[in-house]
Image (tube, rainbow, N blue to C red; front, side, top):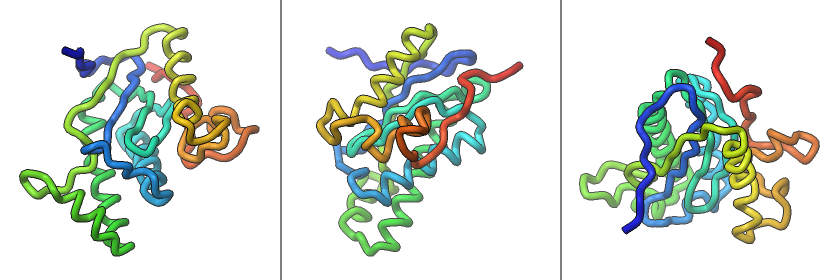
Length: 180
């Protein structure tokens, strides 16, 4: 039996989060869909607010490190997942992508759903662990064989953290922590 990491909300820590696409579908293989979920992540961070520390949208999942104000991760992710689903439904409809639209609505209650229920998350307390997870996120596309160098993958925050290496889809926040 595997242990599920679904930590409770906690203020004053960074949260390493993995959200998986329902049924392991390669929903973020298309440029427009990958960019949409990343733009939604940035919007959600700006509106909630939350600090965005690192991110990568892989074809079947998303990793990020966030620090929502007040530590309210579950509320933040609930809004984010709903926003992503709406954005992908809109994009698929505009593109006439009936296959994706049909899949999004193939749920028991026939409400669109992009991500699996729940999340995989845990708290990052130490600098060592924070940087370990940042490096894990940035190197995920190279380990998966999608690119040979981290700065080649367009749907990662690597180039936002290291701007001399290229451009990123969405910017990161300058600081990890909230000032009191």
